[in-house]
Amino acid sequence: MARIELTDASVTFTVRPHKKVTLKEYLVRGLFRGSVNPAVSVHALAGINLSARDGDRVGVIGHNGAGKSTLLKLLAGIYPPTGGARRVDGKICSLFDLSLGFEPEASGWDNITYRAYLQGETPTSLKGKIDGIAEFTELGDFLDLPVRHYSAGMTMRLAFSIATAIEPEVLLVDEVLAVGDLAFQHRAHARMKEMMSSARVMVIVAHDLATIREMCTTVLWMEHGQVRMQGPPDEVIDAYVESVNGPPAPAETETPPALAAA
Figure 1 (cartoon, rainbow, N blue to C red):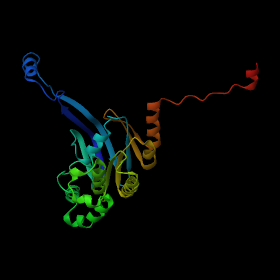
Figure 2 (tube, rainbow, N blue to C red; figure 1 turned 90 degrees about the vertical axis):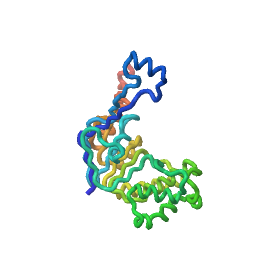
Figure 3 (cartoon, one colour; figure 1 turned 45 degrees about the horizontal axis):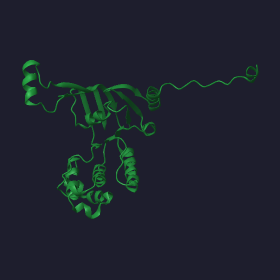
Figure 4 (cartoon, helix red, strand yellow; figure 1 turned 30 degrees about the vertical axis):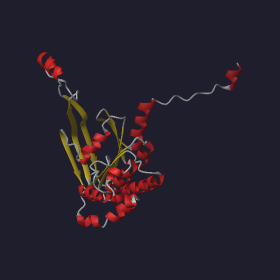
């Protein structure tokens, strides 16, 4: 059984405001003002509770910087929780930062192998999929060339084809993927729908509220790294839209003809 369990989970980053400090600043500030480049704690997520089981489709909405993508990376295991607990059971497929980790000097074929192994494939399991991945990319002879010669669109085609070749139990999706030209986008969206229907648990981040309303069984509204509201899609989305646009204006009442004549 696939499942997600976050219990009071938090993610805190320690950053420093200045990338570089000159020798003069170091001497002056260090001698007379204490720390030259003090560490600052950024609370990206705080007190997140989420439980999802087989069949659950979780949508995550909120303004930019609300912590949505950080939440996905926490679920994927990229960020460990600095507080609380995280448990994810099942084979994870993460559809974000698709081109991360490509080896630019290696060919497209080699990168298919590298990335597939990182996703949990074995030489035996990949053998039956590699030709299908190559065909889906529609890159043809370009797969023999180093990836550094690829355009951004070609790289995304390759990355998407590899990432979606596995059969995930837990599917994590960040925004709608615009991959390649229009014809390839149609094929990509069709494959995405197949994955979404076959995955046991899905968590999707999107600004497309119609998609979230249609596809999801529950919705998290995030604000400043915390869950402001969680529940049925219609209730949460309507509350979110009202918070952004304000309450609907009261309907205007028509003046009765008799009063208008008076």
